[in-house]
Image 1 (cartoon, helix red, strand yellow):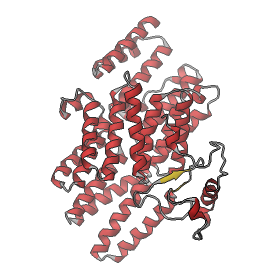
Image 2 (cartoon, rainbow, N blue to C red):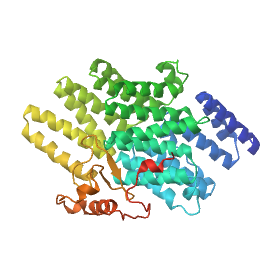
Image 3 (tube, rainbow, N blue to C red):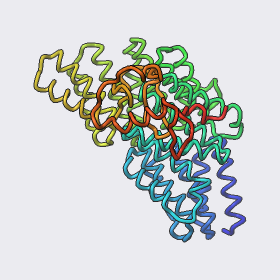
Image 4 (cartoon, helix red, strand yellow):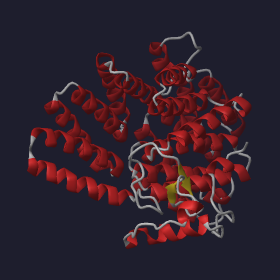
Length: 445
């Protein structure tokens, strides 16, 4: 198969894939790999296969795709490492993801500084977020957003906005958790005519999460329904057909969100089967962090029913997975739930163990306000990020700065110094010359 024929077959596969004939597209591309002799064309086919496997949740298949070394081309090698980073990110191998991303950024003479650098930064940010390293995650997301703006890459900007929505949902600034996916939805409406439906669906999903956290359950349900329908088929098609054509990972997230909404409504009978369905897909695709979130929801349902032994069973399973993945925030939440259960049971030894581990997780996540020293993420609060990615409560203003602030341990000194400079109006860093950075301002208006 020559170069021209290879290109024709790649385009044929893309047309089939865009019309939701995924299996036929995969067959066309696999034939190119079997019969094609053009190495560059073969590599492009492998890129198509990586994207298809990712959207279908076949993350382990992504790991098998790596022939860039045959080409002896730094750009192709960069793309190959980026694919490995993405596949490990989806499999919750976050340390491996970060390692591959650093390798990408360290390759000389590649497109990392222009075309793919933003995608590398986004994948690294998602990995840091998966490990609950919030400051590093925010730094990476800011870099990715700047790459998107400098290169007019609205598709990348849309993806970063969705990740920022997830970031702020986790640190409990629900206003920003809603703002960023709403901006992503605007980008899809303005620029996404030729984009995959997954971008519209993903923005709707993140909006649903934020609306639920804000207590707007009707809006959350509407967004989640749009996410589960928009991505797969026309709006009158059922969830069953959606499963045949769509994105399995996103389907699992939507089911989890549906379950959380029903739990928030107190409809536990409806929530449980949704959690079961979400867990089935999460297990199938290897999303261990997703499994943790499912088990968290299940544990809360059992606690609401006062069936504490079953709640503890779900918590223990989730704790094992959370420790395996390395997500400190989930571990923190699980220790908090365990603490409440053992307190009600009067089991002091177990209670002390979880209290100690809870406070250790709080310190490891470093979720403290740079001024007042209070924890970030305990309740819904408006937050502000500096160019150095330190975070503080937005209620801390210049007026309050004149009041006496509490003495803080050395852990907070760097953060307080950064915030002090920002409030007094002379904060300067390599990433910005303005006093207090607003990530909203980085998003194109």
